[in-house]
Image 1 (spheres, one colour):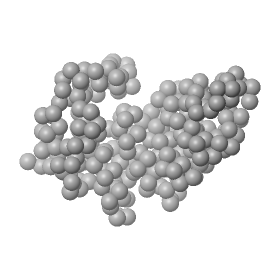
Image 2 (cartoon, rainbow, N blue to C red; image 1 turned 90 degrees about the vertical axis):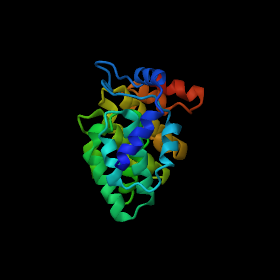
Image 3 (cartoon, rainbow, N blue to C red; image 1 turned 135 degrees about the vertical axis):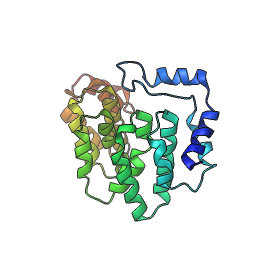
Length: 235
């Protein structure tokens, strides 16, 4: 059996049908919802990570078949494994994983899959490179590619580089998806933890037109009086 087949069998052997039903509701897999048709087998993230410990020497090529799986937890395993390979890899391996990731964004199609991988792989690869690929993703018709763009900037924020988070946040002011509003507001909040002046300059310019969810996420840690100021648009 291939590594991917062994991993698939191991994960499916741990599945919990009742939890799978709950996860499919939580992750909005019904008709017309953002993850319509996605299939869960009912594993928690720590359980997936425990299986990873059994397969420590995986290569990107070995986990790639799992990234195309119709089972959510198998795609999650693949992404977590790629993050591990990226962290341990040399420049050639990192470039390979970055390219694989961008070639398979169609299967990185739920918020947990994006959030566990985009900062490490896309943000990590672009940390010392031209950031233009993020702006292409930020203007994509794909909800998940747009979320990848803003979540990738989390890595830059950790290095006190805020310009791309703010610029992409501005692009997303007119986005129609609540999952994008949440992600952009979250990154603004992270900017504010490190440079409150930069975050508040953005808020003063845009608080009156920001999607309400984005604004609420951005100001979540502010004192109550200041939160009310921004919510009322009196900034």
